[in-house]
Length: 112
Image (cartoon, rainbow, N blue to C red; front, side, top):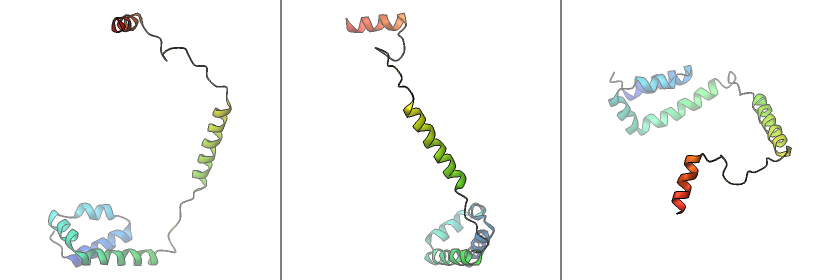
């Protein structure tokens, strides 16, 4: 509680390194949150921490494999193409669903 900007920055850098920034954000008191929001120095320092974190752990970073995503997109495209080639559905004359006798009476009453 009541951490200084330097302590908050240190905690932020540790949270960034450990991948638990949401936990850091939840740990802030209202006063600390206001202090961070008003501090230009904090935001400048967080940018530096992000850059240093990225450089320091660049060799351990992995990129997501998009192969599964691409195969699912391809499968959806093929599926849509097959549906487009299938026989068109016949359209009913009139409404999409049959009217019940109650609905038919109400329509007649509205027309008159």
